[in-house]
Length: 320
Image 1 (cartoon, rainbow, N blue to C red):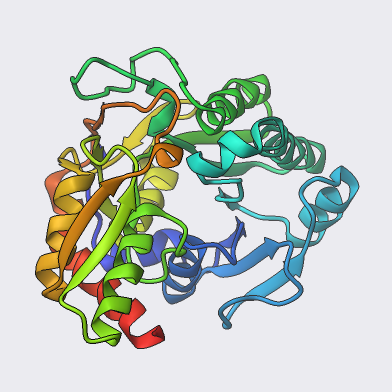
Image 2: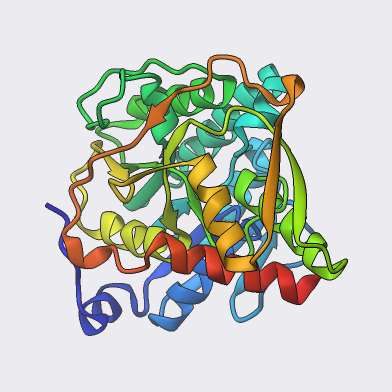
């Protein structure tokens, strides 16, 4: 069981430690980096952009596709912890960029682990994988002992990342795997399902309409959503408490259909949705139900999905 820790205990474990976050400019990085800074860690972020998205930490522009560049970065930073968030993270995009997704996600992970091994210093890595690696379990909830049955290119890339990481067992690179299920919240990029729906509802609000026309794929699939802030807390705990080389589900344990998600967003915005299924939005090998069981104590899950959606609506409302 992964137990919740008090703020004092978390601070005692992270304060003064050097922490490297890959993909620091991404959605989760935007929450993890400030959280680590608040705990007193010396935080270094890397990404492909010229500048950091948020301030208050050290940032390096580094292309994880270039091994020598990664080695130089690791040599400068000398991290105690690494949170490896960087990846091509969209299932939808992976269908149009199949090999690019697999190649990128595996290559950047190998380069990171190889650079850490070459540095020779003891380091603890949180490797972020995905619940998608389980594939279709026939409606039951996924547990970590379930075998890989990836059903889309993104899931294949994540399964391969995990397999490749095992090459570094019994080196100076100590790692734990987080199999993250769906997560969202303020700042979620607009091309993901729930953000796209929120944006369409709010455009109707802006135009003074009471109804919105939604063109969707299969919205009867069920997914396990967590708030991004809960996910960040679980990452922090896993980096400290997870067993070496083991994988842990990061999920809420509660399934909600995309249809129900649309209904909840409609309730929040007071807009009615007219739904039309569009053939081009139907995904190949769509998993009907993807829900997990995790090993975290109940105190770690704190933010209800409805609250997360309300804050996501507010985030896009302010932008629109």
